[in-house]
Image (cartoon, rainbow, N blue to C red; front, side):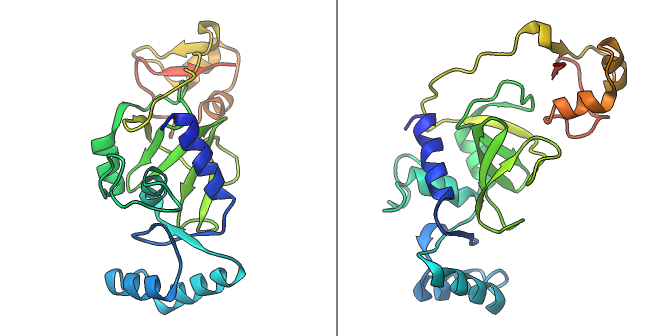
Length: 226
């Protein structure tokens, strides 16, 4: 599968009736599945959660995923899922990141669609233009499009990204021109860098969503200045 196909399949799922369900990877929500998952994860599948999922399933077929289950489901050929197929084991979010991701980086200035986004306890799929498709129990509790840009709706401060080893990456992203990039040197701060380009530290911070905290930059890091 190419990265473009991977992203396309994720976008198709966003347009379906979906919900977050711990330990799921795109199955249809049914009474049988509800009973199975309630026994497997009783702390998560409380009566309240099951009733909420049952109600959502009344409108149309409901597909349930968790964060890594979204990725597993796509690779396992959702909707007709072939469990543990196409080279992907039934791994946790951390297992996916540790075993199936490479070229990991905390620099978000040159990221390709189809890369895996990672933060402790959670993964998502970068789809381009600062957007991520993820399945989360946060916000609307389903498969949704979030953002890496501060101030946007559904903003999440991802810590790193990496290429998914089961994909072929096409259409390399052209790095930003060097004139628009500042490489952090030892001893520099966000404030001192901002002064060099006649801007406020806040504007510089907002231009660089990969900077989680304005006090956390390091030598060699690339910052957008335009």
